[in-house]
Every structure is written in structure tokens, then in C-alpha cells.
Image (tube, rainbow, N blue to C red; front, side):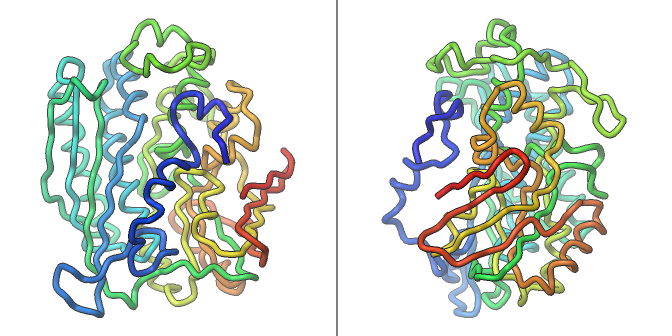
Amino acid sequence: MQDEYLYGKRGVSATKDEVHAAIKNLDKGLYPKAFCKILPDYAAGDATYCNLMHADTAGTKTSLAYLYWKETGDLSVWKGIAQDAIVMNLDDMACVGCVDNIILSSTIGRNKNLITGEVISTIINATASFLEELKKYGVNVHLAGGETADVGDIVRTIDVGYTAFARMKRDKLIVNNIQEGDVIVGLASYGQAIYEESYNGGMGSNGLTSARHDVLNKIYAEKFPDSYDKNTPEKVIYIGDKKLTDTLIVKGQKIDVGKLILSPTRTYLPVMKEMLKKHQKNIHGIIHCTGGGQTKIIKFIKDKKIVKNNLLPIPPLFELIQSSSGASWKEMYQVFNMGHRLEVYLPAKFAEDIVKISKAFSIDAQIIGYVESAKGEKVEINNTYGSFLYG
């Protein structure tokens, strides 16, 4: 599929076709359909174990944090950036069953002329605080240090990334084997989980390039030219009408537009630990709806059609992005998670217990669709906005 949408015009890709083409001939590990690459136990040579290593960043969300910090002086947004980059690793790994005893290392590249030591300190301290919070729920992640480099010649503002490693027993793995007749339980990306400090808009760390430019006013191009790529066509740079500190009423609360978009990427690890404790043998697949949004599942099925006909309500943040940009609903579902960022595939008789576990953490959940047999791999979304077919 070609990126003919606004997203592609800004130099980013929802489908990552070029990346997938580049790596298509690389070894895909022990289980090619697993959500993360799974390697033999090179660390200790035990055939009953396997190794996982995962690397990811907060993406262009750091550019929005830079804008908000420069505009308001509020350092707290950088705490969320640390969580964003960590969760993009840990929750991917959790999709194959890894929810404990993980080693984490950071790689931060900054432009020292723009990013102060206070920012670096906030990110590093927030990392330690977030890992302490996870320990309360039995998820042990151990910080191994990392690298912080001043690379202003190649980094416009700051890039925040982490690499995670774990060793786990193979019989605890979740290897995607999604089957005809499975139902899909979707776990909300928005709201306020019992382990979150405030309302979460549901953004995650994907689609930030579009969210930033579609919602925010052109004044930010003039005030902060370091916040965007000057090679991007001018007509798609900051085309919205909102200022960072404009407010929306969400659940009776006034929330800044900037902070709503900057909501830290929700981790599902506490929920997944409990879910796997009870249902590891019953789950046929877990998908983290990151890059590719609601179409992410396509890469992890074979001759299946995924029908999503009972999605959770679209949260206010994504309604704002769509109304600001005029993007088609088809594009929206391909770029953003649109309200749920975790999918569990399993037989219908176990679905309500997954919903119950999620709701115990104050995270809404419901059966959002089902799996059919098909020729090829497809996703179909049906709701009041239309019927959209991908694949």
C-alpha cells in the first residue's frame, strides 16, 4: 500500500513498506509470526529458554515535548517521554509473554544547544521512577545504564530510545497462532488506569507527526523552526488552529491540548501479567497496535480476515485530530490506535474474563471483533463512519 495520505507527505510512513522490504530476507527468529523476534538462548545455551532483545524510541513525540517545554517552561512533559520510549519496548515484549525480569538500557542523543541538562536529568530520573512503579505490580525491570550523547549535527532536538533484553522459558511464550473463530478483546488506550496519575488521551507514541501538524497552529513553525523538518512541504506544516495551552473539557476536566496529545504511552504490563497468569495457554495472539494502528495485525496472520465491528468509542483526542486535519476515517484507523492499543485473540469462552481483568485496573475493554478464514490477509473495520478494508 502506498502512503498517499498526509502522513506520507510529511516524510513518515504508517505502513513502513520500505523498511519491511529492506529486512524481508533477514532471519525472523525461532517463530516468524511472534510479535517480537525470538532467538535461541545464546546467553546460556539452554534449549528450554530463549532470548529477546528489543529497541525502540519515543519517536517524534519528543518534538512536541520540546514545543510544550519551550512554550511553557514545564519540565514534567519529559517524564512522559521516558515512559513513552520504555513502553514501546516493554509492551511489545509482553505480547510474546515477557512480563518480568527485563534488563533495560537507554540511548539518548541530544542537541546540547537546545536541550539542557535539566531535561536530561528529568528523563533519567523519570525512568527510575517508572520502573519503581512497575515493581509494585510484580514487573521487575532492571536499569543497566546507557549512553547520552551530544550529537547536534545529526539530531534536531532530542531522540530518546531504550533497548531491552530478557531471557525466558519457551513454554511461557505467546506465539501468534490466530485462528478462525477467535474473538478479539480490545483494551482501551484512554481513560485513567489505577496506576496512572491523570487522564490519558490515548495517543501512545505513534502518529505524532500527524497529530502535531494537524492540530497545532502555524505560529509554531515560525517560533520553533527546530521542531520540524524543513524539507517537508510547507502546506502540511502546522495546519491546525489550536495552541498548545488551549483547553478541552474531557471527563469534566480542563486539559491542555498539548498535554492531551503528550499523554504518556499507557503500559499494559500490570494487566498482562495478571492476564497471562490465568490464560497463557488459552491465548492465541496478542497485538500491540502501534505503527499501522488498527491494521497492525496484518503482519501476524496467514489467510485470515480480521473483522472489527464493535470498536470502543473514539476518544476526544482522535476526534480532534480528525476534525482538524480533515483526514479520511480510513487513514485515521491506519495511523492511530483510535481508542484501543492492545488486542487479545482467543476463544470466545475466555473473553469475558480478559475484560474483567482489564476493568479491575480501570481500563475499559470489550469484544471488538472476530477472525474469519480468508484468502490472503485482510482487516475490515465496520462502524458508523463506514466500512474500511485493508490488505
